[in-house]
Image (cartoon, rainbow, N blue to C red; front, top):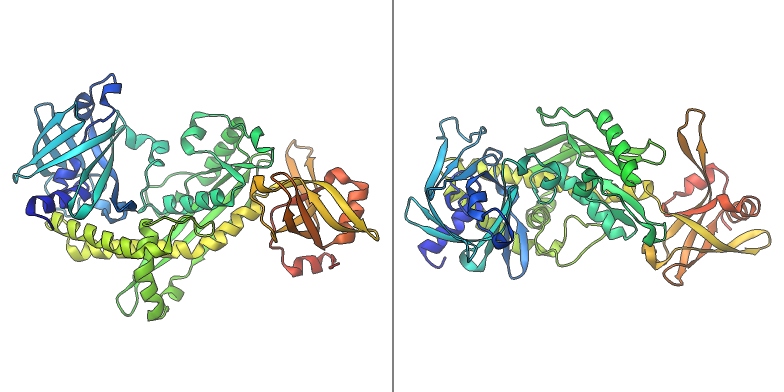
Length: 514
């Protein structure tokens, strides 16, 4: 702590609207000169609600939004043209006795420099740089104590109504967001999918993936419905039908969405929180109009509560980094969402710093024990989600396969010995990756609906990636079945990137080894 002023600067910054006097009170545009409407006019025309908090030190960023209590998330700051501001508590009060006005002060906007100087009733001043401002959003940052830089993102009352805009910030206290991000990051890490953002999707921006050689699957990951929210009124079936109709128009082939069924966190005998999560994921194929796969993912809270203290120690150290996304210096395809395991040291210190700030700033509004209980339980639920991620990754990739054309087959004694397939580095194929060979055709039913008919023929393993567009594969299952079908219906024999077929599947349908 360098000095008292710097200390209050930091503490003011991280909080949202409660006693977030200085935090909420900051806004200014570096881009102001490019906006027809004066930045100060925009600032005073709206009420601003904090939606994201990030802290950065030594080129490492942590998302601290998780530490905002639910009762703080609807607080807002109102800048007045006369140079004063007030911070108001929203409908969700942390205490019934809380005043509507949580703080007030004065502000001065230096538009040429893109800086706002907030002066609080206690005499403190905080200088904040406005990185961006328009009628929907404002982003500002300022230097805090100990070499930290804090960046705050606010939405206006207009921005809060824009669901697509909400996906541009990372509210890691929102479990629907966390699960959706896990899916997106794993698809990105696979290197063989084209993802469309929700904003482009809802605006009807048409996809063009011809430059991907026709192999890439186009996917929209749409937020899960939160059935644990008593205010949630969305009908899942009706929403899915609407999504499929719209996705067809913009050229999106697959939709991944679902529903959160349960989230819970309970204390074990040692007083530590352990989380429980249950959610479903649906994969919709717009080409056929069908739900091609649906699965429920769950972590049983009873099993979690029976974890040994050794596991608990790992949770205390590791999850802070996982939940906050700190130190994401390395990217793991398998654990895309959680980032770098080894960032826990940074994350713990960042979390402690934020907790200390919040404890002091919100001491009169939220009991310290209540705040600690809240964020520990939130982290526990995130850890439960993490435990489902490996299965989630496999489920999504297996049900959004890449369909690959066979270029040629090497035959020996009436059996397929090896295959050359028309895919390679362009879809991130890996040596030793297992693929399935199937008889595939699209059948149109009498009612006009289309059905993808797939018949498993065998399994192959990638031996070499010859170039970006060709790979050589060894046949390991179904050599005769593959060759016979290739001889009679070569246009129907395709390779799929589903892999991981169990031995029992081949045994059940009578396909043996070679």
